Image 1 (tube, rainbow, N blue to C red):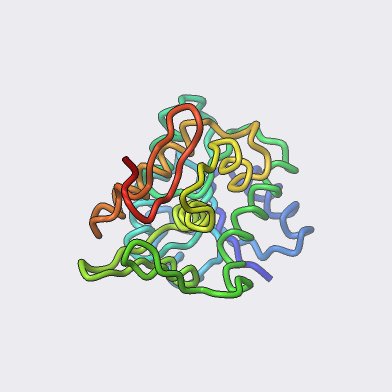
Image 2: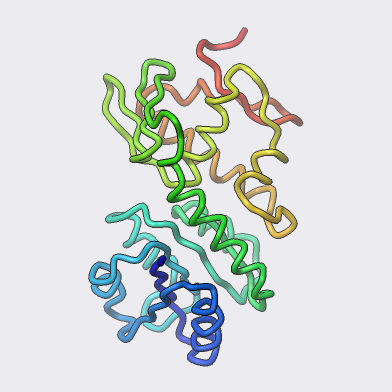
Length: 229
């Protein structure tokens, strides 16, 4: 049974969400002290974190930053604000998905299921290690290593890289990536994928291989073994 940490200060919404998710066999925990979120996160060791942006003392962005310094646990943001910069900011900080309030509960469940599936189903792959552009890609640990060092990817970043590597030298459309990453692409901004790919490239640049992910304008992205001419 998956443990979910729901960081939500609206007590009515928290209770309703917990009750509904419990019916789906999730263990849902809340926060008792919004000034000690990291302490409670560390003690619980949840499989997924759901964070509201507007919280007492510190906002959800702050806690996302803190969590990401210690863990790559999947993070899903909630927000009652409708400004697109909230979604962009959450993805830049390493969140795996974003849902706007008020939300249909079935959409929340679908997003939770998709995030958990991406995060914890890599072990079903026939091979967890892959060689690409002189680097070793560890799908299980979300880790890339080469002679220049190592970088750790978020679940979404590794999922994108895995899709591109498995179809290397072929263009993977933006639509296909979005549909693979998020069950219902109607609820995903096209910019969400761009943010994730840019963050992936930035990490690959640390190993000197960011340029091997090429953008094909109006089409999608392509992983190559050698730079195309």
